[in-house]
Image 1: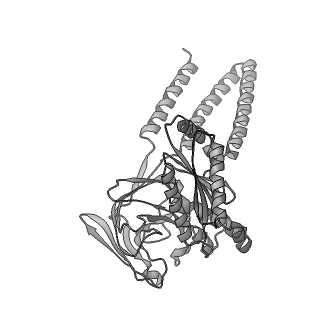
Image 2: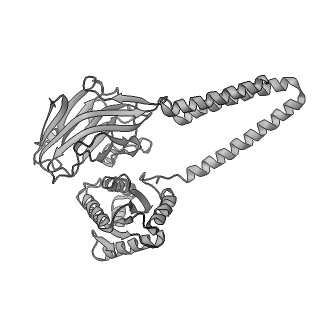
Image 3: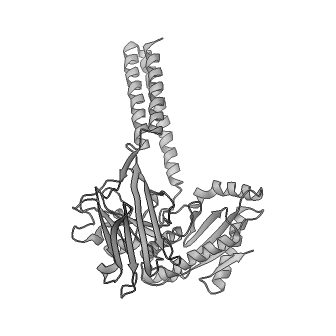
Length: 431
């Protein structure tokens, strides 16, 4: 067996072993947010002239936040927990390589409250942050429902969004408007937007982040580099043997160059077909096309259910005319965040066009879909919007039958039209 064959076999075996090791146990890094290492502080609306009371204590070996939301001149009473990574707020954790935010938190509150918490990963960047103004530290956040004794909840860090009110308050430039986790100096939890006055209790069981030692694309690029380097050595050896080998190596080089060009063109095409809406970060139509086909087949074979909630912001054109398209874009981003806080992980939130969004709810009955639409409509109506005015939405609801997907969407659209005709801020169901 020639030495070249032996090297190729060695590279193949080594590459397979490296990929298997990377996939199983070679690429996980964890950061646990431990009270012994980081400082835990209770927070409340008192810094905003509120009267709510929050107290942090240790109960049964666990950090517990006891809170009393009290009505005051501050319109949005809250309390929460702020975890400081370092006494110097300019020094934080680089979580840019991390993909999962795991929390095990019990949230005990009155059943009339929403049962949801807000969480923020605060990022310090001298480009927009100052040491003496905590409000300038970026809010990457979302709302979630921890419940009681629900175990560990995994939150994809990619699901967090920069709060639009923070962008507006600090007049943040476009290049800094995206989520950023390169210097997270605080991890915060607070009562959600639907929290009612009264007692609230938050028990912290565990908080950790999971990431990768090396990103998958960098890892495979390294493997490619090893292979390419070996190939170059082969070419040099063959060049020293004969002109014929030089010509052959040159043809191979041109072929690889052509393949790389084709790959670059394909990558460009795929990037144009990105599954995320550029403005709001929600899914786009292309992202759910194949999924909808599968759901339709399951509905037709009576092996599943699918309900569509068709949303449209009421009087959105007037908002654009009054505040400008930049504010309109901020409202669309915030609208998608509010809707996203009211859906399940299995639901698909899609920006359908303009100010129209569709939530596709698998394994959901028509009555459940109607209830979910009412809940989200109420969230929109009660939300404090970035432009300072109230805002509502209209919703059309339709359950898929033995029909095409486009027909179900058309029925939901017709129900939405009826909701608009009946005065807006309504949910209309297509039976």
